Image 1 (cartoon, rainbow, N blue to C red):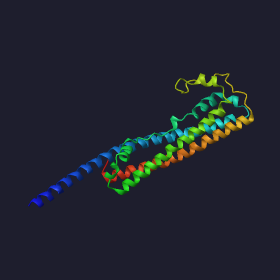
Image 2 (cartoon, one colour; image 1 turned 90 degrees about the vertical axis):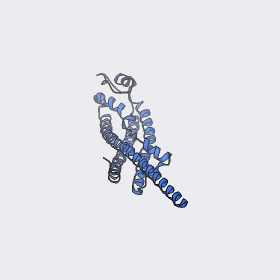
Image 3 (tube, rainbow, N blue to C red; image 1 turned 30 degrees about the vertical axis):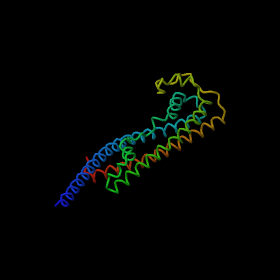
Image 4 (tube, rainbow, N blue to C red; image 1 turned 45 degrees about the vertical axis):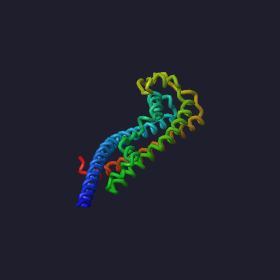
Amino acid sequence: MLFLAVTLGFLVENQREHYIEHQREKQFIQSLFNDIRSDTANIAKIIIARTAKERMLDSISFMMNSPHPVDFTKQVYPYAVMIGKTLLYRFVPNDGTMQQLKNSGALRLIRNRRVVDSIAKYDISIRNILGQYSVEENQIEHYRTSAAKIFDALIFEYIIDENAAVVNLPPDNASFQPFTKRELYEWNYRVYGLGGINKANRRDLRLLLKQATELLDLLKKEYNLQ
């Protein structure tokens, strides 16, 4: 009888632990689901911003290489500011739950292997995108160095506010520094580099959005989430 009582007690305690772990799993999944759903909205916004940046890069390149670029100063100077920005075009994930899952070992609570694999792949994709930003920052620094040989800093000071937001159009007499063809070619190369990393990032963001959407659908199906 004593053995039976001990065995039953062990089984009850074991069942209780499984129930608690299952409840924690559901809580983590719901929190992760909310984070990823928020991510999808942010990713979509950044994709739109990246598309707009591509148009600006194409436009400013066309205008600066036209026979009379000074005719386009009212468009060129604001574009020159915008393409040198970084935060407007960066995806920042809502990864609080993801970090908690990884750092606390709570990922083991998720018993569905397909869900675990999908979460891990999503996290890897995010890390890859975040890793591109150091490359882009380096490209932007090179761009700013070449831009300093072409653009008049006083015009930048006139058109942007203390937050580096464009608030004014350049004055009618706005012009450029007297730059050489070599300096223009160097600037062209830097703009080309910005365009390349921008396209690559937008491509990867589109893939990440697809991945996030599929992961949301999987979590809905496996955990009956809304």
